[in-house]
Length: 320
Image (cartoon, rainbow, N blue to C red; front, side, top):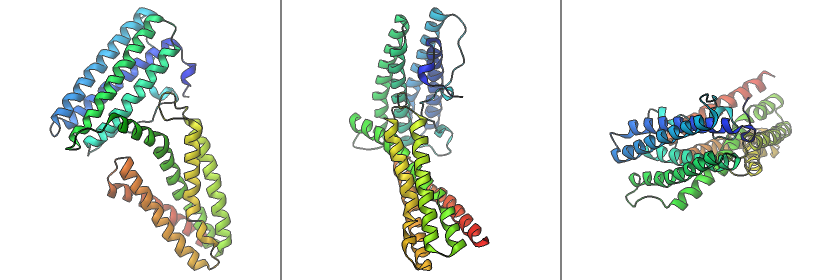
């Protein structure tokens, strides 16, 4: 079971830092290898960052052995609450510079937050000094990562402030909001249309839809708020993320529930289906714009999932 960062000992914090540096160095190496043919300058920059992460890991190991002995506990990011769950985009068949830039910025931002937080938890002065030094190094890396944008636009790199603001917006609003919208729009399709086709009454479908939407919103809101305190990930205040996620979940379900206020069952169902199509299109566009997912791929994934749930609801309702 994952532990809170506040529960880790100083030895475990340092062991976690070693693991994080080793993971990041390998990821940068994979990025560099994938981009070296088409974007040699970017690959060279990533290789430099990889080598620096290796040096950081070595310094941390030396400090650990000096302060605590030879045995280094096995602590990885998955064992600690608060880290962003990374998608292994370095394994994607198609990997763009834009995707790499965003991932590198998130990685360095998270590392900076980790070292700043870890330094405050450490009483050993030598260890604290090293963690502060590495926080400064990660800040340099974060600044350096912005330069990857140079290969995306002839006008040059985005300003650091704009990149930071956008990153924070994606982490704190878009990600939890999109997760909620997807859950609310897709998961409530089955109960709403099952009730509609089982009873043939708009009122019954509306009641079931409202109950499912509000229940899912409350559940998703609490799940998001309790999943991460935002200290290490930089994802902001948990109750704000929870509110965003819960609200978008509820909206996603209510969208295709409101048409069942129309007394004419056939008209209500037709309008609800149109709303579902708009919801799925909106989700696809958001994934494309903010998550670097190709539009056709995003649309295919969302539509297939939505259609399967939609058909499930109709079949269950018709069987009743």
